[in-house]
Image (cartoon, rainbow, N blue to C red; front, side):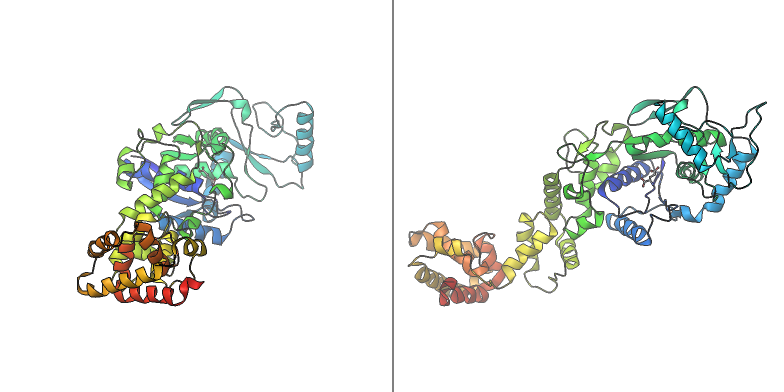
Length: 468
Ligand code: GLU
């Protein structure tokens, strides 16, 4: 049973890299009958915003991955962290350091000049028989943790394999500032322990924090969780994903007309696979996902794949669901007597809900203009007569023309009897009905519009000579 968490810092919206980490954490928890927990890491008051918290929670609601516990906010847990700082001071695993900013800077400058990695030099670290400097009066001490001086810090990463850091890569880092506010790596370790987290799945940009967090676990005698550090999502050129590539607010995907199941399906495959399977329902993800199979190398964002997945889900969700999704774009089909027919037709060609809306509008709305290139190409001298004749045919058969196959049944003989080629009839009709030559099947459009509206639109086009 895995207890996992997602721990965003609310410095901005939730982006897709974060959502993928959350998805992996969510799937692993649910697959093992464990729990998925959300924690907001909002101790950096200067960089956090309430709006960002709201945006992150909104995104989680949209994708349907609720936290199994009340959401924890680090800003409300400062007293808890103090208890553990005191514990460490008491058990001798942490100490007060009175080094001034100037002294620290001088130390750093010297180390850099000697081409050494800047690290604390242990001036205030208590050791047996060591005499510490005299405590200066004017300095609020920071609290430093006693990190091991020699040896290695090791852990088995579920993605990267055996990880080994020389202890000298971790110095006695600060766990509480002079103001008493605890630092990032300290609170993450405390929270993960107190929240019972067994499996930490996070971006590999956090890999260098892990040895520090292990120092905290060890100093407090806590069990170290299992870590999975997942490689980044890059753009197709292998560079860091930029906004233009898709590194945007998860809610922007909603605004662009993506369905959450398509986005999650897209994300689960960015860094994990099951043979060459591309489509995964949440149920299948839950059955098959295993963080131990996460790819070791970075993945590449592919917007065509996302569109393809989205069109798959648009085709396969219910029309009722599509109507709901369209309402988000202020488009209401409620009460339209051909609603099912319209959706069945238009969902076949839409990559996004926005495209779905546009293609429905292209049929339902009166054309405001006629595509010039199409008019020049398809509206010939004999077109008007042919269209009038066709409308006549529709009228005569009015009672029997309800669905696309009925219309096809009268149209096909009309085409052959008049020695026409299909586009000679269909393109002028498409232009009359929708203004454009790119539109779904004429039979479907006529069935949706109904004969009255169809004839009216054809008459209008003829009357104004297709706007010429
Ligand atoms: N708050 C960190 C971030 O937003 C995540 C910390 C973690 O997962 O350990 O990147």
